[in-house]
Length: 176
Image (cartoon, rainbow, N blue to C red):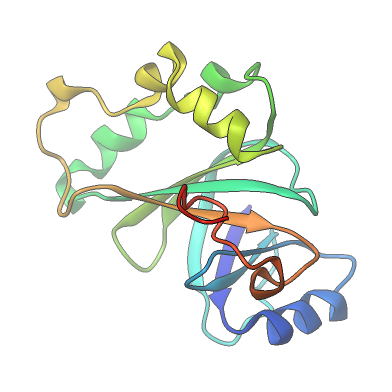
C-alpha cells in the first residue's frame, strides 16, 4: 500500500477529493497549509506527490478529526535500525481512547518518515501525548543520534469546513 501526499488550496484539493469519491483520501488542514492524502495500491492521482510506502496501518480515515504528523528525518545508514524499532509499534496504541487511525510511512523519495495518528479530538491526542504509552512509542535514547535533523510535529484538522471559516488554529492554545 502507498500513500501519496499533495498540498494546495483547500478549494482545489476539496474538488480533487470530490472528483474521486471511491478513493481512500483524507483532506486535512492547519493555519499554514492544506494537504490531501491518498492511500492506494495503485498509481497516484496527483501530478507531483510526495511518495510513501505504508509500513504499518491501523484504523480508517474519517471526515472529522485531529491529526498529528511526526516527521522524522533518518540518515540512510540508520533506516534499518529505525524501521526495526518501529515494527509493530502501532499495536502499543491500538486501545488508546479516541484513536481513529494511524500510519507509519516509509519515504520513497526523501529521508523523512511520517508517523501519523488521527484522533476523535485534540483532547484525546493531548491525553495520549502525556501518557506512558506515548513514552514507549518514542525513539529510544539508546539508539543514539540516528536523525539527520531533529524530529518535529505538525497538527491538522480534518473537517468539511475550510479552516479560515473556522477562524482558529486548532492546536494554538492562544486562539479563541
